[in-house]
Image (cartoon, rainbow, N blue to C red; front, side, top):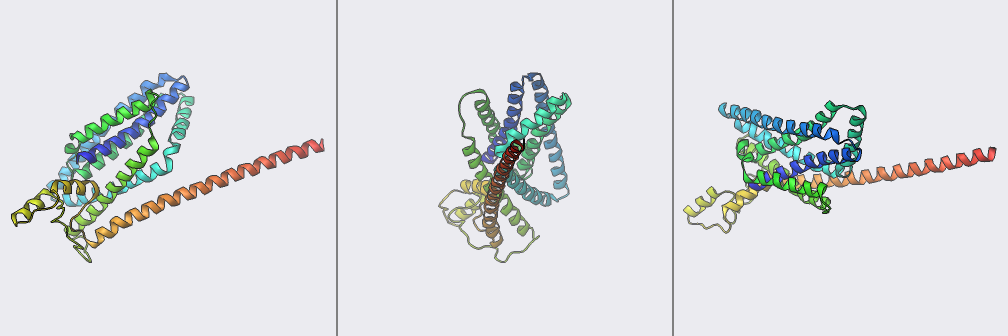
Length: 316
C-alpha cells in the first residue's frame, strides 16, 4: 500500500501545486502579487477541508461496517475509484498542454474583476478537488481504513517528492521532463485503475452478486501466491512457493494481480487497456483533425480578407 499511497499523493499534490504555481507565477507577471496571500488562503482552507472529508468518509465507512454492509461500500469504492483514475488519465491526455492557458485566462478574469473572493474560491476548489480524490483513492487501497493510508510512509514521501519537484519547476532553472513524468505516472495509474476494476469484479463474484463462466482459468499460486497467508498455507502442505507472497500482495494491491483469476477478471483487465488505449488515440486523432481544420479555416479567412482589401483598392 505504501507505493500506491506514494503514487496517489505524489500525482495529486503535484497536480494541485502545478496549478497553484501557474496562478502565482502569472500574478507575478501581471504585477499583482497582492493576490498571492488570498491564493494561499484558499489552498490552506482546501487542505483543512480535505482532512474533514477524510474524517466524514471514515465515519460513513465505519457506519457501513457496523451494519455489516461494508462489502457493498468496498465494492462501490473500488469501482468508482477505477472510474475516477481513468478519468484522471483521460483528462491529462486531453488537457495537460492547455492547463497553463486555461488557468491564466481564469485568473485574468478574476484580477480584472478585482475579486478577492473569486481568487480564494478558485484556489480552494482547485486543491479541494485533488484532496477529495485522494481521500477516495485512499479508501480504495486501504480497504476502508483511510487513516492507515494517510499515516503511511508512502503518503508522506509522495507529498515531499511533489513539493520538491514543484519547487524545481517554478523556482530553479532545472528543466524537468514533465511529458515523461505524466506518461510514466499515467501508465501506472492506468494499471491501478485496471487492478481496482478486476478486484471489484472478483469481490462481486466472491459475495455471489454475479456469477462466472469459469471461476479459475488457471492457478499459479505455487509460483506466486497473492498473499503471505496463501504462502503459509502452501508451506503447511509441503509446497515451497517460488516467489514470496509479499511480492504477490504488492502486485495484487498495485495492479490487481490474482494467482487464480476468473474468466471475467481476465477479460475485464485486457478489455480495459484495449478500450482505454483506443479511446486516447481516437481523441488525439480527432483533436489533430480539428486543429488542422481550424488552421485551414483561418488560412482561408485570411486569403479572403486579403482579396477583399485588393478589390477595395482596385475599386478606389
